[in-house]
Length: 494
Image (tube, rainbow, N blue to C red; front, side, top):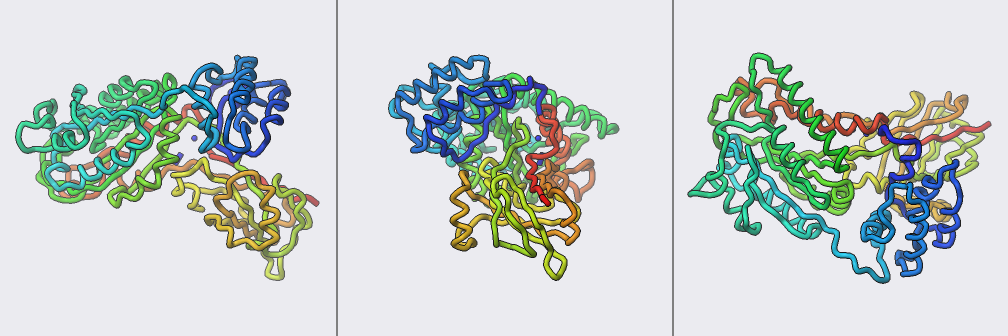
């Protein structure tokens, strides 16, 4: 899982992350007037979240914030007199409310697109797994959307003027349903053409959901790798253009379904198959909308037993992660804590077994929904002399003294990182811990590069899915050259 753009030096002042905020409003106004490294945008960026300690913004408070934003009009912040500023501020803190607001609901329009080529028929005939998963997804997302539109898609977009129940009935091979009536391809579909249609159709407050088997339609079976590489580049190009023009984020969900029907191989020959096959749901929209959906609904979506894997892509920079050192939890050897919040240790000594260990609390709130990344230690890079363990934070794990120091941690404790090192760490001057952006194993495990044999048709794999996901991933990497999500540095002073 994988994510700093070619932007001006002060671009960071315009990129924000959710934090637990405690600084008083009056202090905010004072800070906003300061010049941070000669760049007032940076000061505004760092302190914009520190709006109201009680989570309520009064009319005078909002007017003062608006005034500061207007003075710093060169910063990339929504118009201070618009509802966009209110929505922008609400993104900075959960449950933030305004004393008075005439702004309309900012919930997105949800646009559902189901590929209706013949290659999709096996999911519909096989069982209700496919339709059940779609229904479950839409129902869970209804609370974060203002309106839902349903469409079939292949060589064109076909709107279906029905509510959820009526649309689900149209996903059928019986009778003269819209699914059958508007078919336009007998074996496959041009996924890049479909992605372009969906991305071009995406308005500023929309979220598009594309449901597909995820199989590239390869035209030259004798030159598979070249065709897959070309398709991957076209996918990357489509997403680069959308990221540039619409600042989109993308969620990829892999589901399991019974499949009973024709499987079309890369030479477009049909093979009768009855097995379990993966299908994919791509959720695409603006960073604000997708970020909200993923924060609020990731846990609910993962309750669906047919959801097997997922990915979340967004245009981001390397993120500063708040942490605080602990005194005794998972302690080995001895140390002096010079600064808990800055990560400074002194007098580091290993125990009689030659081991030194310590721990710290972090706030991984911005990674909510991506626990498969943050909680897997193979995704971390640390000094060769050390190793780490990651566990979810529970207050009961800490003794009374630790809880006193924890009051200094002005963020939301989510995880505890325990570090254990060899005695040689006593001679080092720092320990660095980085969360790496790595490819997900499930993508490789789900990939087929050749599907001409009987065993391939029946495997729980998808032809070319690694190229498809790589095209999307590399598009986001074009805007984010860092190979880490964050780096935490613990200094060892002598």
